[in-house]
Image (cartoon, rainbow, N blue to C red; front, top):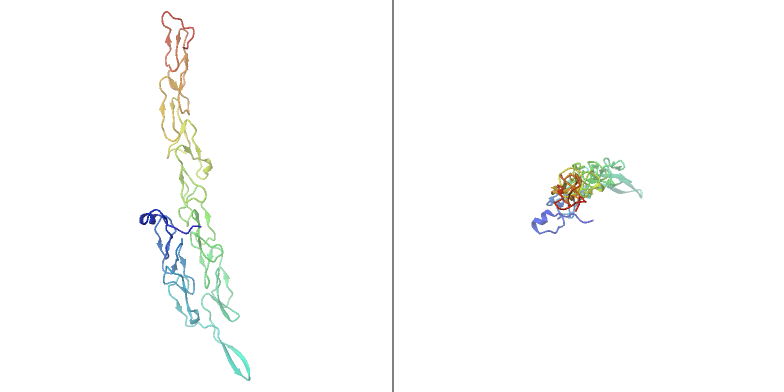
Length: 333
């Protein structure tokens, strides 16, 4: 997969290429400038979200990785800290060797593990990622679904909106066009007929005249010359047939051209009247000329045959009398 990039900022500064998201910043939106990481988090670059500083680490610089606390000296920290704290009552397990009657024995001194650790076989161990250790005398407990923890954690955190926690160990940003709510372990594709411009919520339904496919960040406007009756099914997008039309922002279906008119374009509302001697029915892209032997007094298709002694050629609205000295055995010429 491509690393997070941002485009609008780069267009304003360097041109049209997309640079890598810099260290110390997050780039959740490729059309916006990078966002600085808050204190207690960090980013080494190419990140959609800033990472939370793990337990028993400090993150004084948002552009560099976590620095471990000196746990041997009793230092510790919770998640999201920029400094380590000192534990006054912290004692690692110590073994003292005594010589008595040529025999050796061990004495266990006071024992308290750091927060986020647990005691096993007289040793302190870090609580593994995906688990939490509230009491060092108890075994680690698994984070519930929708929650996560890093190593050395004494509690689980809800999976943030717009991220997935598939194995309860670390939040992963949802792909573009997908979303998740707070404390959800998986991301959901934006359903067809909706737009999801952000990762942290289901977006609005497409309005009539728009449609979208699954996992879309925005709704697509139905183009001129097409009908889009179903907002959640792009397969129902059909081109308007000849003699009909649809413009952007009009009804969802194609409009038939009325009788007496012709509509040469399907993507424009160009409705032209038939000229004299021509006619059309509904949904016509051109007009039909009135045939010989008939007259067409209107443009909607009324045809009247010429009487004997009169005639007409094509495209006429009235019959012509046969001239003196001639016979007109046929009404058409």
